[in-house]
Image 1 (cartoon, rainbow, N blue to C red):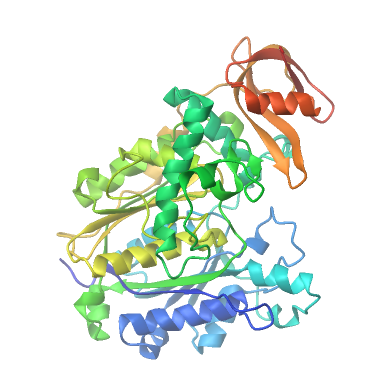
Image 2: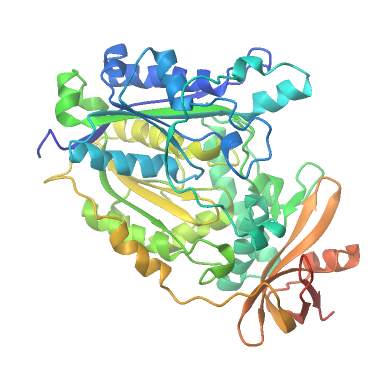
Length: 511
């Protein structure tokens, strides 16, 4: 092992801020707190912060182009503001575009930078305080202290493409709670389950996540719930996007922050970092599925995750059977099931599928959840030397993916990952159906969901196929009998007629 070019994670920290809105911290304050704590976790503390040459801040949810928040751009230069508060001035400072894959993507990218000696000490940090922000607004409290207009616009990292096409956005496809149920109903057909069997499966799957969160002191929702409480509709657990109830949805309104620090082994030794703090990235990969949801191969698989698993296991010289711990990205159950299927992990694997408790129960702090996943995995592996852990990260709608395999055991040989560009195009070239924005004629339902608001059922969204196989998006008539019937009976493969409209197309089922 060449210690000068071997990347290693040396520090991590997390915080969950449950203070009342008057006293709770801003996102910047949370980032500064976890950055300092991560440096102390590594050992050197301030001395480590002062030798950083790179700081990357994960994009805030309010800064997403899809956000309708008036808080967008409230902090003009997030990484610059973090560095200023830490009293440091690293030459490289970055901010990231939207994507839940971001933290693992950053670890992969900057591990490579360290291996190529283009970076020597890197802080990756993020936080969300949406719970506090919303609570303060409801109470009429000022957000003036959250504003920082200083500095220049930051240099950006990540994929800046919009979440969806204008046509998809007309149907709400840019919203995760609208889109992931489409994958879930397609999975029900793949598994050959009845609607009742499927509902029980979802409850059992996420009850295992919930049980971990209930024992995690950092969890935003540490309440333990039964499988039935999670998957069945009740006064406190309404449908959001059928078949998902509220307890099956990621929760973004949290106050949480996390950070990790990586460097080379040689630099870590110069700083006096103890070997017991070192966690190595053995295998990794980054790839996208076909970008637009309407153009996917299908709604029950992910060629990108399948490819990443192959690349990461090959790089690590390991297989899925060699893994001791997992944290499978869990914004919604369909993301978990698809990732497990592609990686060869049973949905009820006795090793467990999460070390945190998952986004609906541990908490889903925007783009930064996986930073918590990595930090938690680091602590688990430090307490279990020689074991291996795998985690995956997912952005948008089973769209952007990153994967990492970790252990305290140092890799043998040089650290080198395959360039993601070398395998990305093959994923995009997979055969997929054509799509039309102007469908007319007889058609069948490929997948669907029935969407709800707080007052009840609102509309149904259909992805269907014309008789020639061309795919389309449509809504159904929004009368309550139609919408309720679409929840009561399995509509997968159901026939009907579709007519293109000026704004949206209308699919009328044959019942």
